Length: 340
Image (cartoon, rainbow, N blue to C red; front, side, top):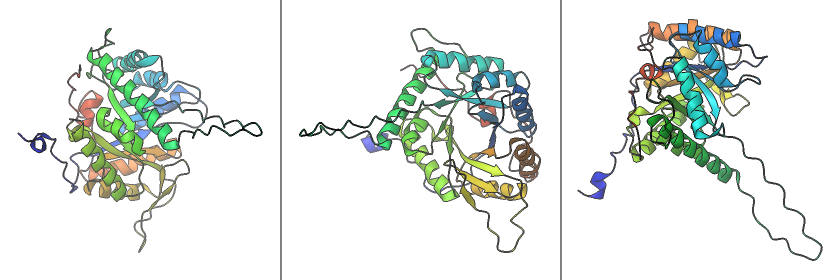
């Protein structure tokens, strides 16, 4: 067999409608920390049959601790906190996320969160009459690549803990492994997402850009020896549903704008957002969406009772959770241990 024949088959460049639509919501609340606030939002999302909710930061509280408390108030929805990769080492991460998986009966995931690297100190001025030994500071690209290499190492070590391949195996979890999600918007993150993630989030201003990133991730996953269908790509949108519908107006076009934080913002009504989601999915650009409500209580309620309900009515999104675990919601079977 030639080396070309032995290589992983290329991922088709022609996009088509993805198999299932997946929906999720960030439930970060900008005001003071109260567990009840997050429980209320998670129950609302669960009522709409969303796959999962995420939490990046809860004021001064630990997202893992918050969602562990929320687990007792919910029964089906997945719970995906951001977890610093520096948290007590890989074994500490594996134990903490594994505890959430046990508390939620198999509904846990996690997003590795790299600790920001401090900016390098400026080089001291050379003494008069002496030349400076110029050493170029690491570029932003180099720093980003270093952070993602660290993240990759932790993700691999955490997976080995769950698989039982570490010298002292970590806790066994109901799903085999909790779901791993990675923000793959930055090019430096994509190799990590393709090798280790079950979910990849992408911030893109249009379906063509999102589709190109999805194709790249699928190619990288195939090159890493993975089945590309086991990596779901979700577009991330900040959503402001406080205005009226745009679509019915003659000549109106639904567009996305920068949200001021490096992401993209949708402004319009629940019907407009349903049209956008349906169009992106039918074009094969993404496997679903994670929305970030601008006004958490108002916008999540309108997303669930308006946008999601309309997608369900059209047969584009399910009206119930298909299983008990997050992997079952996402259609991702229990992973085989990788004990290399």
